[in-house]
Image 1 (cartoon, rainbow, N blue to C red):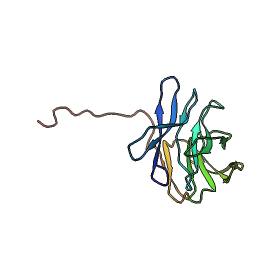
Image 2: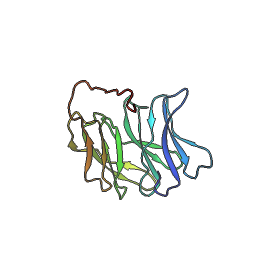
Image 3: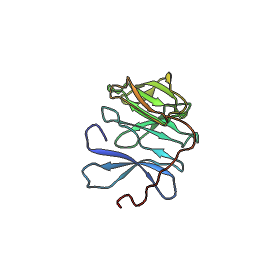
Image 4: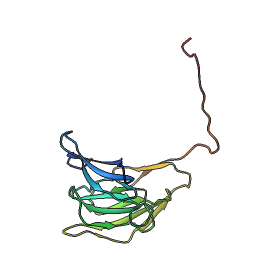
Length: 167
């Protein structure tokens, strides 16, 4: 959702490409609008707290997922922010930094962002490392703590099927 509640950013599988980022009016009326598209995957991400910038993950330039930022809601010039892969991204509350998970799913990075008439990004700095076996991760709203999902045990799983359980 955009900070003003007017838009939903989503990722959709489209014919002729792979995944594309789309802008959907939250009102339920109006047309979807393409935000990011390439022959490879472009995954929608969060909008900055001031509502002017979209952070998203794309494979377009390097063939692996990297973090990009572009103007919002009108797509414009984009800036590649990560250099060593990215999988998930969060804006800080003040919109001056992005925190992102590396594409290895265990390195956490932070990069300073300068907004204005143009967009500038500093060099990403590694903040932390998570265990190699995490499945997914999310951040608290203050971006100071993270919840990581890690399997309890490895190895093959099992499924139990119960038949005739009503009778």
